Amino acid sequence: MISVFVVDQLVFKPFMISRALSIWGPYPWSGTQIVYHLYLDVAVAILGVANIYLGFRYRIKRDRRMYMPAKGKIHRYIGALFIIAWILTYALGVLVMYHAYYP
Image (tube, rainbow, N blue to C red; front, side):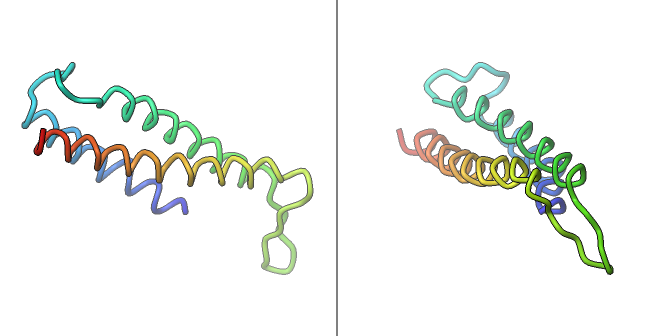
């Protein structure tokens, strides 16, 4: 999960930003619904960092295995929110690009 999040933030986000800047020029881009995608994307980044922090904060390591204690449920809830928001961000990004190319 950590590697996917890091690759997304360090590889795909800069690629998408450079692609958007080359197509539409400097922000704000008229005629797009990109602002909702950007807000959701920032929320996903914050949830991802919070989830990574909580995962390391509440883990217990016994006999070379890691366990999540009962008070680590917040990690699971934040993780579920993160995945849902990540899927919504992806879907909204595809929708924005579709409307940009096919108005």
